[in-house]
Image (cartoon, rainbow, N blue to C red):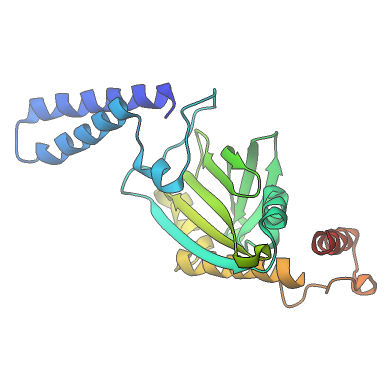
Length: 249
């Protein structure tokens, strides 16, 4: 864990203990419990969220992050197998601007530099929510992990792991995501955009990803691989050629 995160945890623990000392009531017990958890986090450098996502922020200088409050975030986990080797699956996912092609409510991902990117989700009435994120773990062919940066309208952290299947020609993909919708209008919009069942949404997104990588047809109306005569715009033609190249290499 980054030293700044440990320092913030220690400050939070001190604040909790001070508040409990002032109140001295049974209602102070939860405050003491939170303070104890923060103190443990500060002294050990261990974060339950980072541990679940198998990420580390202990080394290197990073921008400030927006943490998901412990116990308050929405947690999503799903695994799917794709008939492509890990190297190809990782390479496609690591090109972050590919993600809106199978994530239904993700409007765009703009790459800012090697690790930072800007994400935009569109909801009802054409209202958009955007945030900046950074990649904090990147193991080619194996793992991509990220977290949102300070000021994010949708604090989140997650990881996607790529594991080679039997024979080396398939990939087991595990997505682990945690996010914390804010209150108010923005939170309502985000919840509406993600649907009544976010778990079902991520499962549907990964199914489209599987279809995209295996058959080059992410949606029912998408042009099939190699059928450039059916393509009506340059962007779609570029996508078809990119998918052709992915399956040939």
